Amino acid sequence: GNSVTQMEGPVTLSEEAFLTINCTYTATGYPSLFWYVQYPGEGLQLLLKATKADDKGSNKGFEATYRKETTSFHLEKGSVQVSDSAVYFCALSDQNQAGTALIFGKGTTLSVSS
Amino acid sequence: KAGVTQTPRYLIKTRGQQVTLSCSPISGHRSVSWYQQTPGQGLQFLFEYFSETQRNKGNFPGRFSGRQFSNSRSEMNVSTLELGDSALYLCASSLDSGLATGTQYFGPGTRLLVL
Image 1 (cartoon, rainbow over the protein chains, first blue to last red):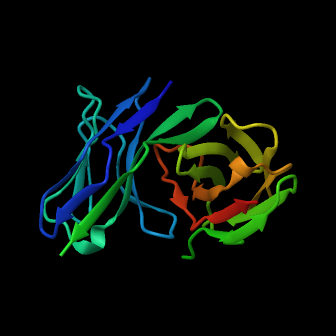
Image 2: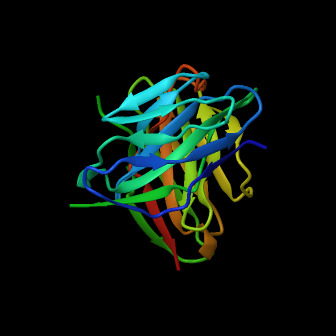
């Protein structure tokens, strides 16, 4: 079945460091790919998305490119801030005839210190 | 535009009881999905409702059920609660059931503790 694999955390960085969180997926068909972020005590917020191969999603300095050849959707940011500390989830849409569902990775905790 | 709202935010129940959680989607959104989040299993899809019909269902026992009303508000019910049902239950809404054209927006969740 479809699945998402994320790098294990936690990831600990200093402010202004470069961030990469790896995400690979297994899917039949052509799913859409998403990154969601969860701040402590809150629900999930959509960070960015890509709906087809070679699309680049971007938001708030974060970027991810849909790579079909490597089945990857790695999240990057050039300079992290303390406020970026959160849990990041990679997800894919699992569309079938009956409807849709998001399949999530396990999440990667990012901790940024000043 | 108001976001997805979930009530209550916190619940404490005992084993064997039943519980009902409520979700109000973003105005105009017709699809509502429910997810369970636990430290061990992560985020797992429960079910999706679209226009008052269950369109998709995850791999959960029949104790988990849901429904959607004509105004798109949704409720989920868990009967005969077990300790393992302790989790954060997240509701998400989207304009339609197709993620290629829509995106799911999540509420803050209901944290359920079963004692």
